[in-house]
Amino acid sequence: MKIITGIAEARQYVGGSTKRRVLVPTMGALHRGHLELVRIARGAAGNDGEIVLSIFVNPLQFAPGGDFEKYPRPTNADESACRDAGVDLVFRPTVAEMYAADRSIFVEEIALSRVMEGKSRPGHFRGVCTVVAKLFNILAPHAAVFGEKDFQQLAIIRRLVRDLSYPVEIIGAPTMREDDGLACSSRNQYLNAEERKQAAVLHKALSGARDFTGSAREVLARVRQTIGEAPLARIDYVELVDADTLEPIQSVRRNSLLAVAVFFGHTRLIDNMRLR
Ligand code: AMP
Image (cartoon, rainbow, N blue to C red; front, side, top):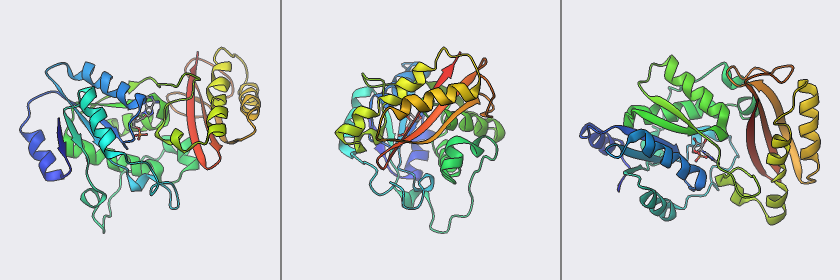
């Protein structure tokens, strides 16, 4: 497995390869969710193809005063996890390598990012779109894998590829969960024991609504009530939206998506579920 930190070196590597290349963009602190993305990437690349996993804690997608500084960066553990998972290249640039101090161009999506995460975290998707565009430009992947856990992000990346004509196939990967249903996340390690225990309520609330048919008002009330059973939970949003447009809908129908963001202490967790 090769590890590259510089853009020029990455370009040289990519320019010298004729293999089908599948990219897995991450911020590191790798867990089972990321490894599932790698597994799917191997299926998409084939045995003759190559998997590039990028590790970059992207300052542009964090709010000022957010957890950028304290975001976990277990470099050695991440690299050995990549080696074990069959990653061919780890691209691990520094912030200085990725962003000139006087940078003045950004990539911004202006429709899908108006709701949910985009509304709660102004500038977040601008940071995500900008870094993903740069990774596509540097690494020229044939395909890239993103998790459905960040459902809105996946939808916005598909839009980025469509609207800016990137020749990159976007592959969605199902959400990996812990035994109690909590979605795997690098941020779960911020939770103390009691918060961690109570965080299982998110999946419980979402799966409790899975077969629900009725009005948005009813389903949202039900989800809020279940989350409210956890005394440490503080709801940021609970939304019922169309899974394609991300527009709020009035009742459960085909292609509905239920999405939640909930604080436990200072830790903000997100999760979602398709309702059929
Ligand atoms: P992150 O390192 O949090 O930026 O995530 C990198 C990629 O892994 C994104 O495409 C996420 O959607 C995906 N991901 C994060 N958690 C999970 C999970 N529990 N299951 C599947 N994919 C995930």
